[in-house]
Length: 177
Image (cartoon, rainbow, N blue to C red):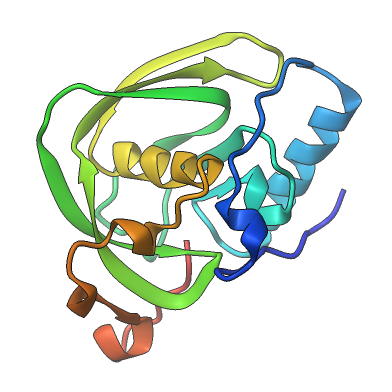
């Protein structure tokens, strides 16, 4: 498998609606997931959506055990989530700083639901049904937004809370998510 180029904001393919998958366990899906894992790990990301590497399918991967950029974040299990459905479990939202491999070098303060349920399938078609909060919920929402053509800057409420990482956080070595 291989490390793929990540599309950057401005590429029209990032604004498209991704298509659902029905062929679970296929060699093509396995190859896509391996490319996504290789790319995410090579770039030290915590998540990646298939559209970010130019594949318009409803597939995201995410997970983090320990990450220097998020020292206080809880562990998020390594997950393959296909054809996800997200349901907010409360109206409560919280703003948090986000970055993205498709928006390199920048950060923005993004509102996200604090608690949600997500459902979908794994690479073999087995049901995934989890209720999560905190950082885990933020990561899932961020990645699933890519499947609907939404990049995190589109969710920022106040553009004064968006800028280059090195300007917003001088002296901190922040990479993109």
